[in-house]
Image (cartoon, rainbow, N blue to C red; front, side, top):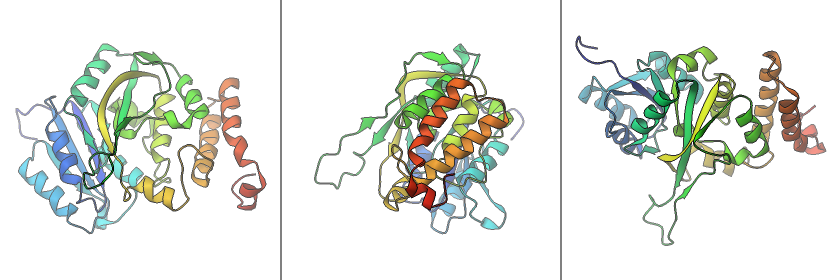
Length: 296
C-alpha cells in the first residue's frame, strides 16, 4: 500500500470457483458500499472459467481496493482454505465474507461497523439475510424474495453458549456467512475455518468458534442478498442427497460429531449444551446411519 493511503477498516473475503456468471455483480456490491476504507480480497480456488481473468482485471483497475490471491499451483483446496488465505492477507480491523454469487446491499458494512463500535464487548454481529429468488427474471412464475429466520430476539447480545443452544434446537435459524461482521483479531485467535472441512457445514464450524469466543450481537436489519440458484454449492449438495439444512443427513452428522469433539476438548460442554448436542444427535442413532458406519 502506498504511503499516505489509509489502511482499510473492513476486509471482505470473497472465495470463488468458476463464478464468472455472477461474480461481477458481487464485486460491484462491495465496491459500492457507503462505507469508505473497504478492501476486497478475491481468492481464486482453482477456477478454469473466465472468473480468474475477471478477478485479476478488477485487481489491476482498483489496486488500492481489490487484491487477488490464488493457491500455489492454482489448485482447488476448498472454501475453508480459500477463506483462510483471505483472512491471513486481510489488513482490516473487521472481516466480512461474501460468496461470488451473492451481493451486499449498499449500507451493509457501514451499518454493522457502527454496531460493533457501539458494542465493543462483542466479537461479531449478524442479522437476517434475504433469500434472493427474484433475480431470475426469466421465470414465468413470480418468485418472491424472503428474509431468513433469526429465531432469537434481536437488538441484543448473547453470551456463549446461548446462541449455539438455540441453533442446535432449530438448525434453520443459523445465519448465512454473508450476514456477519467480525473482529479480525478474534477470528484469527479462534483458528478461523477448519481446512479439513472443505465445504458443507464449513461455515457452521467457523460460526461455532466465534459463538464460543465471546458475546455476539444479533440485529434486526438485512444487509445481503443470498442468491438462490440450481448451480450453487448448497443446491447441488441438496440435489445429490448430501445435505439438507433442516433434516437428518450425513453432512450434518459429521458436523455434530466435530462439534461434540471440539466442545469437549475445550471444556465447553455444560450440562445444557450437552443436552442440546445429544438431542441433535438423536435422529442419527437409528439403523440407517449405523449401517452407513457414520454413527456409533
